[in-house]
Image (cartoon, rainbow, N blue to C red; front, side, top):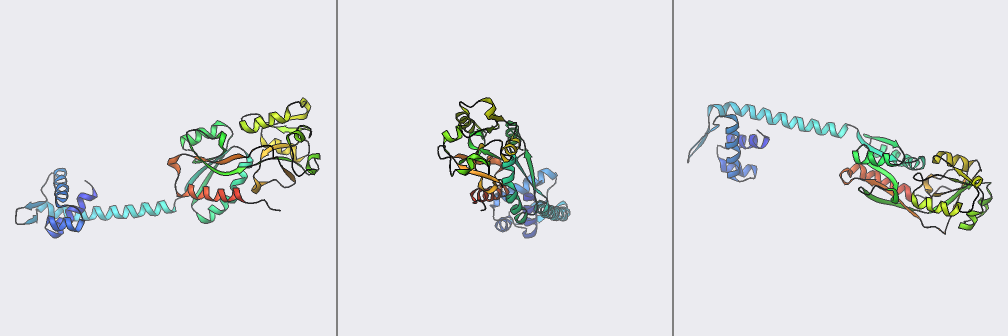
Length: 296
């Protein structure tokens, strides 16, 4: 038994005419007859006496009329309540980041989403390497921030920005007096703070390898994560090479362009099944943040 059968039954019961019932329901008369026959088979009773000249309700048909009306009314109430529940219940959006720099990009985005979508409940995951890719495949996160070359091959990649590479250093670092830097200047620029692959993506790791070529071991500070790297850079012990995210630059650091190297593509990764209105809104706001110019 379904609502279509009940609607057909009540229409025929009202008009006592299959053709008029079909016209009211905007379906064909054979379709109405099929629904009534199926309903009668399921109930095991005849609901109508039908002849070539007239249609009238049987005694079970009269009894079933009130039941059918109650069922349809309850169905309508249930659908309305479920819609209200869906509109008011928290919308969950799982967002995955690999490091604290990516995490900082989310703050202005989430602040705007909170205003525009009050029932949004973000779930942030800060997990490096392949663990995030597994969470994306399993649906625990709906979107993952990533450089293109590190994005999972099976997911959809949407570029949000082309990030130029920059040298970051403390304001009192010797390199800070330059407007931009060449590869040779980086090679002779003192200690470099570096992270191993896969903390650094392949392209960045390759560039880093060019810079450290010929440097003595004491000129390289190996870091387990970006938090350690930035701490060493901020304290003036070393410089580092990173993709530039202008909207979340760290105060007190210099960001020096590296024209010898090509920008890296940065974007969002998601499965096509996850692309709902909330995720579209998130991606649009994140793109605006990525394009924002740094505060002077």
